[in-house]
Length: 603
Image (cartoon, rainbow, N blue to C red; front, side, top):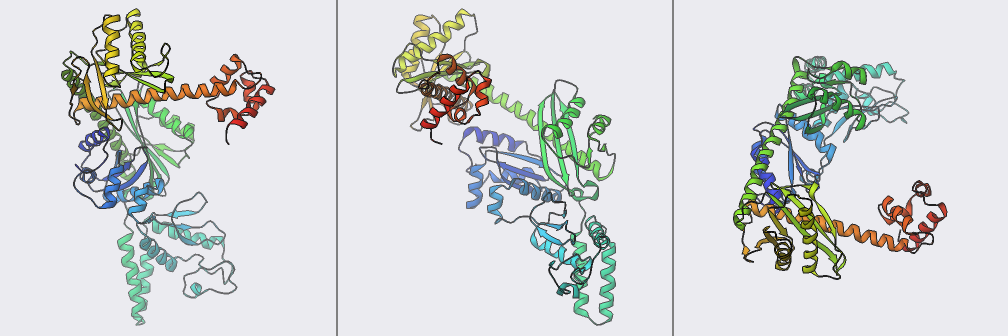
């Protein structure tokens, strides 16, 4: 297996998703540990291309990319050409760091007709909301430049500066409409612009006829070099002006919604098309408790109102969606195409929603199987009946100060966050690991017995033999319970290393690629995170309170109000005085609080 993330959870997730990839064209988006898109690529076969990143050797740059991949997503398209256009737009949208590095910072260009009184045709690297007209994107600068040269000769706009006092060089070549020589009316510009638009919409007969006529006339006049130039322009048109589903005239400025409903889950995909290209894809999968068609209708309405998305000229939806309601709400056409290219785009959107939901279901099934295997392996390793319900504890303190414990609960290998608990160490002074463990185990399981609550099948201590012995002492000698106890042993880097059997007090060497070990690793990371987060909160509030105790006029009640309302000291220092008034703190007291904080906190 190629050298990607060393995190077993990440590797397992990627391997699962690799098995679900379709043998279809599309694009893939590689994501880092922060879920940021770091690379976008296209593929004729998604399964083969994406899998290739995680198999075999690579060059230095690709190896670095693969090492940073923590997840990936795909979008299926109808063809490799569609994938190319979508890849271009996604790269421009997200600016992935590895696309910039691997492609030498090359951006995909557009042609732009400016919105000036005397418009120009120019090359730009991005589309802006400036009232201009854009065409593209082009696969490279050469393609954009060649097309612009062709249009400058066939349908020239302004090529001179506005300060020209006489006819420019391009005007004499017939490549400038001539505002440098005479007044050009808006109607003349619009005539040229409409011809350019027709060209980009695939209507090339007019320009080809003109070029053929010019080529024949040049040949008759023995201007063979000029005739060859016209011939090259004709060939360029025939090779480059190839219509694609994703760039058709009918796709200009519309959004397409597709959905799939199955087993109580709803998968929705949104393709946003602007300037004839898919510029963005949105996806959502969530449980559906009501009528799926109504849920989709509501989703579409919320999509534009809550996410502040600009409305397109029209919306394509499946036939089951309430067209009339959405049309009345948005005041734009909402339709279901029955045939043609728009129908193909709607079906492509629905196809992606179906693939996404199928992938989610298969991941559900794999995760359920994985966790069942994990708890079974763990129970067998410890020679206990079951490890279905697990509770795990971790302590956190700094030299015994602000000592706390956190407890996380797992059921069938999954976190049961409703059962998480936090404890402040109340009866122990200083850093006494044994006594702290005794207190927490005593408090937790005395309460469960008193409330007749179910007991766990296994208790995992995030520590070594000291914590395991302390837990067993309380359970067996004070409470009369025979709950199995084990310890999660860490290496010198504070990572899960082994499992300590609480009864034999021997190390159980679980294979590090086993499901049981991966479950232990997840539990240890989670309980450590939970405990240390609670400790930081307690420590912060203690610091919070000690500073407030120095402020004249701030008693216990006022201090508690401030502690509950403000998230931290800088927020209190920088707050508007009216905010203090909302929680009943007098203005003069608020001013003294902020003055004290400004003295003690750096800006």
